[in-house]
Image (tube, rainbow over all chains, first blue to last red; front, side):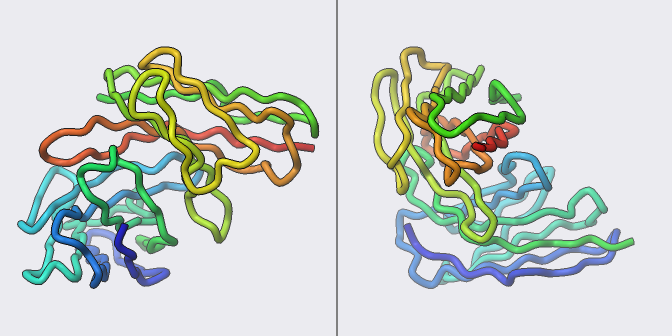
Length: 111
Length: 114
């Protein structure tokens, strides 16, 4: 699976958009970009995924650059409950979902 | 909603004991996984299974075995627990579809081996 690079930590003001970047310069053509988050003492939670088009769901938006070498997860109106570690993962659709989790970004939403 | 449940949130065992960690999912997913999570090391895959009675080693299978006799249940077994197996254990399941195969995780079991 391709390696990803994320900043170790970020802060965001409550109510503002949180933009979390991820670099995946060695991504292969068949690899999807997945985002998960893990709130303290809980299991990781799936947020969103995409291949090359931008995606949006009720939790977040995913923007993937045209060359697919980087992506940004956007939480449009961050709340205190969005404080968590966010993981960006790239993997093919054919490996049954087996994921390699890096260190992620610790997002702290502040009042 | 997909639900993945794990038998215990907290478990304390002694060195040398045999330990069973149970995981059950209710969405008929064919794929199931066991990870452990340690500070500074992230989540590491121990074993996974893509069908009943099928299993494959992950990145750190040593000291562990698994069992999948029924589709909904995936068990992680520590044959003889050791202190370096003190960790958070996370189970996950997924279904492979044409649009991706997101994993759904259980709440985790924090195992302490004394």
